[in-house]
Length: 376
Image 1 (cartoon, rainbow, N blue to C red):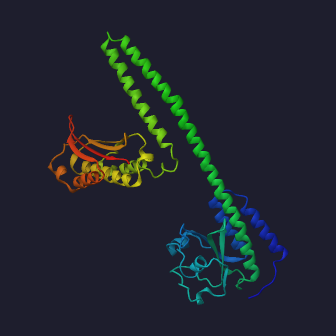
Image 2 (cartoon, rainbow, N blue to C red):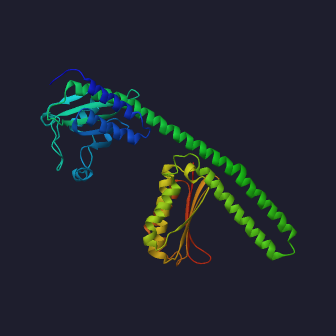
Image 3 (tube, helix red, strand yellow):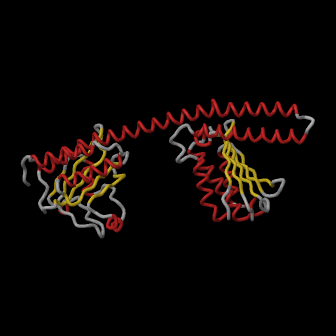
């Protein structure tokens, strides 16, 4: 393999590449640009960046250059880091091969994968820890990769480590900004909105005492007070869900709403949901999984047996307890619903957590399933 020194043109290309990497703060853009720049810098036909998973034993992401999306889709699943690609994972040092197909660790290529011969692999290190690997194949000239190519790729990978770290820090700063915004909104809701609602409620209650000779007016005022109380509970629930910011995307509230959407076709309608209390922040993953299973079984029973035009799901966290209530307006708790395996499973889940499960007829028709569990 040839050796030598990088010429002025190659050094300028490297400098331009380094400057380009540092010009963006979005991590996905930096990673894509790194792969494209590496391909251009060493005149490779194909390039890829494999990002390591948290265990640093497999690849979690794989960015490719030189293979169009249609061809990539035909190839199928992206590599996980076996064969030649796994060599850099096990031993993160630069690797050059004149023909990767002749290496004893070569796995070959999947069907419809373009043929590749020469190979240059370089680790990407971020903050002293392996982040991923650059994989480059087949120089445009048909020659093998040289010492200079390796040096250029190593220098680019070093600069990329800094750019990746900067992008990650930028993302973290934005997360902190979001946390501060959520804290500010939560404070405003608590200190301003809730206090004004309370004050309005107290004023209305005072007006109700003055209007005692007029029962209809008192009734209307009390209805307004009850509505204000419901709004206060909803605002409090919203305040709870502002902390912490990372649970909203995968929390119980969202999972239940998504479940309702999934069951809408079977039910013939979308169930209504009411949430009260710190639903996402107080309910752990295990309890949330049980809650989703219980609501899913209850709604499935409505779809199978109730002939109901509607269903309402109430999810309340208060006094250290999660209470799920599923109401329908159907035929009531007939024998089929009481004897089903699903209801027995719901009872088993509740008992295992020291909670309760009951199915009762609603006074105005239909069925109520009430399931509870301590949240601690």
